[in-house]
Image: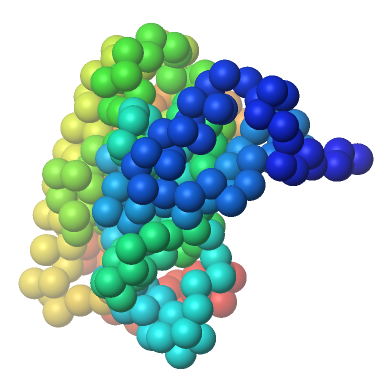
Length: 303
């Protein structure tokens, strides 16, 4: 059962770190409106107005969507009010990061606002957990993967030596890490085509995060080689006049070494090495455009 939140406590009841952060907010030109204990875990939080010029996105989250920012601007103008506070942390004095609210921050900034309402959390380390809960704008596969690999690098830069597996909640799925590296190298990488295979064989590593990133680079290179081989097959099909947006998915579905009947999956390396071999042996002369089109329609109907 949820506990009652304690709002506006006496300063004597506040932890020193919370009192110091309240002073910092005032010194930075912000305004503390309430200090309270949130109703789930009794953790201290602030409801405040932060100086917009000092609020930034976390350095490891997804890129802004200009379309989404523009839409938010239009809604704010129409309502003539801002009703959805951002979530913020303070990694150091004078700086505030928002792991949940960056599009709102940017929209308000473009409207020349000076302050932004925020729920400020005194514990900076929870930024990674908050990113995992960010539903302000639904992530597509590319955005999520880029966000996760940046998050992993951010943790390494902060000195984390925990195993990659320890961050399963924050990263959500292991294949996001591998795909993030692939998208960094090629923004048009066919992640959606490879994701079904990666979801089945890419696992979190029981390896300290710095070493795990090296292994992720190696895995990404193996997937990249498979994609290069796949691209060569697609080019052969195009020369035969077969040019369909679902063609990569179709070819992968017919060359994957992962059958649905298999109870024991091969390792990551075994899977992609066999996939590359299967792609090299793929007979493009047996494929018809109508076959791909029919399978694409069936796939769309099941999503």
